[in-house]
Image 1 (tube, rainbow, N blue to C red):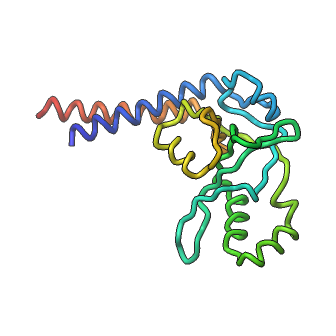
Image 2: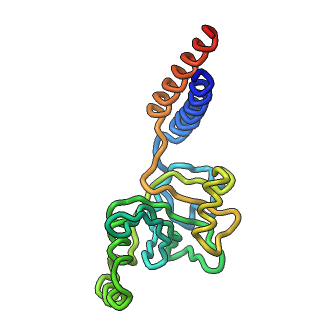
Image 3: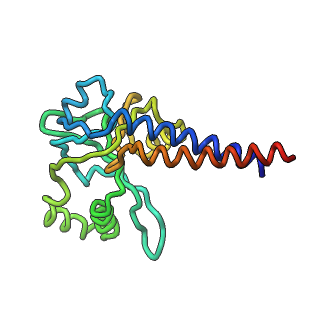
Length: 196
């Protein structure tokens, strides 16, 4: 039990430190176009992409089986009028947005013949431009397991890709809270170790 507490405490403490540091370094999101971000040094972690084009027809879906198949996450390329992705994809959106998930679930659960009709009738809802915000991750900054999962799902992915976690943002206060929880678990584990 003591080793579990020590390990869990260390992991939670590390997550808290990273989140608190990110929140301290990025107190506000940086607004920029998609092209501006891709031409930058990519040091901005919390961003608002002001001219992102979303094409739901290019989405790769992660499914969960309930009464019927339900979409639980989407991965799709982010483009704009001045930034197009062709052979290799360099910028992706990872989204759990309820509206987008519901749209993808509806489309996925339709018979093939009905899908074409639905696409024709709802083109503006499936292909649109809007601001999107979130935490930006680089391929180098991801866990290997996460990176491998994304690469399995998305074909033609550049080795040096970037992934925007939709609506996620760093928080100094949240990170500090997580840090305190990790510290408490470490202290509990340490006390058990001393008693043993």
